[in-house]
Every structure is written in C-alpha cells, then in structure tokens.
Length: 178
Image 1 (cartoon, one colour):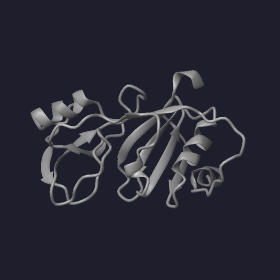
Image 2 (cartoon, rainbow, N blue to C red):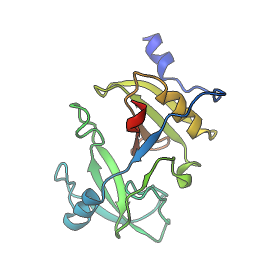
Image 3 (cartoon, rainbow, N blue to C red):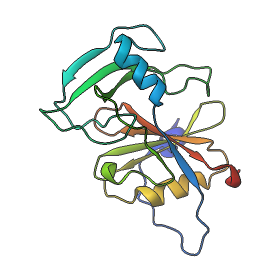
Image 4 (cartoon, helix red, strand yellow):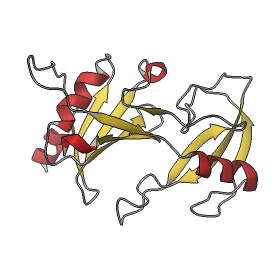
C-alpha cells in the first residue's frame, strides 16, 4: 500500500537534458459526439439527460479545449466515459462542451490556454490500470508529459482538472514512438 501511495504522489520533476522528445497527440472529444449531444441533449454513451447552462466556470470545452467565457457562453453538461474503446472498465463522469459548434482541438502540443489550470496527469497501462499520477501546480506540463511517456508501461495519459477531478483530454504517443 505504501508503494502505491508513493507511486501516486505528486512529484516535482526536472526535465532531463539531452534526451529525445517523445511525440504525442492530444485526443479531444470528437466533433460527432459533441454534435450528437447538442442535438439530442442526451449523453451519446448512456442516454442520460444533458443540461444547458451559462458557463459559471472556465471549463474547458472538451472538444475545442478552450476555456468558457464565464457568464457569457452556453455550455452543455453531460455524462462521458473517456475510457470507451480503450478499457473494459468504464469510468463515466461529467464534462462540458460548447452549446454552439466549435472545432475539435487537433494538435501535437499541449493547448496553451490550459497551461494555467491546476491539472492532474494520470498515466495508464494498456489494460486501463492507473500506474502513475502527477499533479501540476507550478507549470511544466510539457516536461511532465515527456517524463511520463518515457515510461514503457504508460500507454496513454488522461488529463484531469485538478480542482474538480473531471476528465479534460487524453494524450497518446504518436505512431513513430511506439
């Protein structure tokens, strides 16, 4: 148990010098899933009701990965399982997308707009089991991602909001790094 606790504790990591960078991509919620929830106002995975509200927090939107304009933009709250298709064990939770159409974030760098959020990076094995957790309070998200992706046991990283605990996005190695 102590070993597990030690493994999951937040660590202050320093980037290693002269080591190659591991390529990765950010996997946001798809345009199709976002459009379906906007149209039906139901969770596409579960059929639970979705709710529209004026943003009272920054979010972010799980599709475009931009923060919401608090008090101005409408957002849709719905139940989402970020492990669908990659793990047999479901872990549904609440997420938001913009009420209006937005374009899915597609990039190979961590979104600039999210760097000032309190974040948790959860490194998962291929079977979905959590193997490492990093809490980021002091910046350095790129270094932490690189450190985690160097671990051959980590198949992908789930990025979570460090305050609310909810899923934000997934990070996967690019094909040439496997």
